Length: 130
Image (cartoon, rainbow, N blue to C red; front, side, top):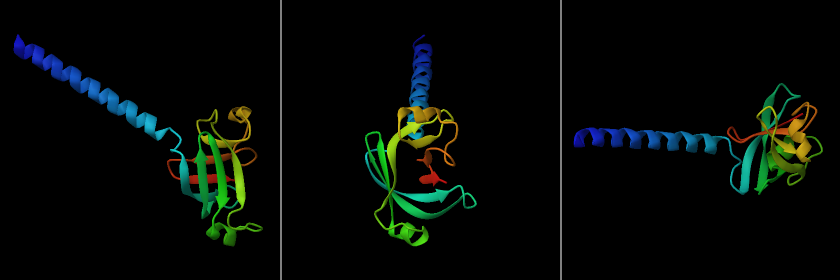
């Protein structure tokens, strides 16, 4: 009897622990990074869907500002180091991708990246624009 109760408790504890781990991993993957400054790859859909430089990303609450790095200023026409490339609010688009929106309505934009808000991939640390 005691042994049976012990086994049931162990099974319950394992189930609870597993549930907590799954929830924690889902939460951390899909969330915006903490406040701070980050270096992301600068990627353009227009030029062969490739990343060719870096940009500095500053996140404060739900706002984001994208700055040109020295590397990007040497590769992107009419861009100087420190120039603001983009700024707005971080939104989750209806497609499930994170975007740099100007208003909350951008969550429902017909297009993103090419003819709409820029895409930001927090997992791969990439900023996508056209």
